[in-house]
Length: 115
Length: 111
Image 1: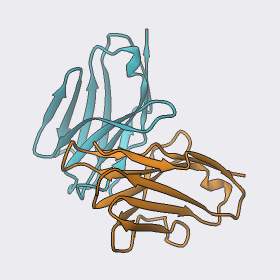
Image 2 (image 1 turned 60 degrees about the vertical axis):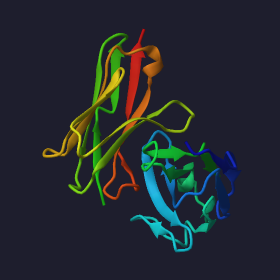
Image 3 (image 1 turned 180 degrees about the vertical axis):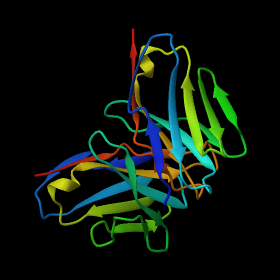
Image 4 (image 1 turned 45 degrees about the vertical axis):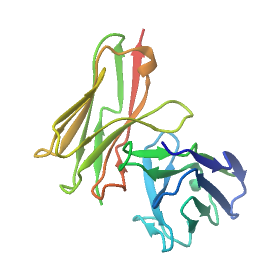
């Protein structure tokens, strides 16, 4: 299965600032996905990142707050903008391997704390 | 979008007993249903999945059943072991790649 490197692994940020999370995959993938997992909660899909086109955002998530880049088939970034304590969460990128082994492979996650 | 409900939220079983986790989904277009296991502080890992053209799938001590008519699917773990203790998430996919997750079940296997 794909190997996904995600960084930073954790960060503590001041409110009002922005953090960019990077996700690198060891193979070319068409779609990459960004999820949020709040403490003790489930995983919520933020957006789907396609190479060469705008990301597709789920209800409740907007581009101004979570801008996404997808410059090539192995890399994506998610920025959490103008952060507030409510943004404290684990952010995970994932790639779709339903055509291969099935399901998603997740990155190791970024644990974000906003103070 | 798809709405996935999962029950129970917590489950405790004695080692060797069986555990069953149930999920329902709302979108009849969903055709792929994976299950993930997440240990504390780790990323979710796929443990089993089922597609809508199959009613049941088994992999050693783990099995998943799907009832498309009723829009529900279940995870069955037999002969539970302490290392099965984790949070389990079901998911449904109407598109084949965008997944919508259930709320999770924290399973504790008591030695």
